[in-house]
Amino acid sequence: MSRTRHASLFAHYLRQIVYGANDGVVTTFAIVAGFAGAQAGDVAGIGGIAVLVFGFANLFADGVAMGLGEFLSGRSAQLVYRKHRRTMTDLTHANPAEVEARLADSLMSHGLDDAHARDAARALGQSGEVTAHLLSQLDPASPDPVRGNPIHTGLATFLAFITFGFVPIVPYLVWPAGNDTATLSALFSLGALVLLGLVRSRATGEVFLRATSETVLIGSLCGAVAFGIGHLVAI
Image (cartoon, rainbow, N blue to C red; front, side, top):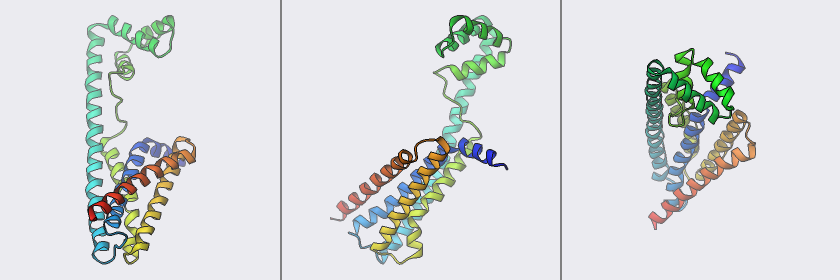
């Protein structure tokens, strides 16, 4: 597969990758931060085991839930779009003049002047399928269809969640639990968020600093909330 094909495929699933990866890092690190806060920085012994048990349980349960949620969301959007398009297709056969007028109005609302919009609508009206497709795309009441297979978008969300969500618990698999392990988990999570910002920046052309600062800020805020709540519960 060519580099261009890889880039196109990646951009196709960018929303699912960013969504799943960001939530994976944030929710899994929240487990670590919550235990660290609850035990006032002492996560040795049963604390370290608890981090792994709850971390992995959260990682796979949330990953599956998010993947299936993305699948159901994408499938529902496609079904609504297809229903709307069938309605437009039926209308093109029942009343082509009305459909042509609707298409001209839609084209004018998107910037074409009256004459060009009507000429374009008349020409496009030669194909009922093209007209129905354009009306479905241009109608603000019709949701954008999810591109691609909902199974693939759900899988992309799941894999991104699992991959990035695994990062915060890596220190607990490699080193003995303790204050330093919680700190390492925070640093690993920070690195994953920075990497996610880089991914966003490269794929969208967004300024790297802005893309990274957004992901890091959201992750840090969620981690701070989890630590604070864990600490308050333990008081």
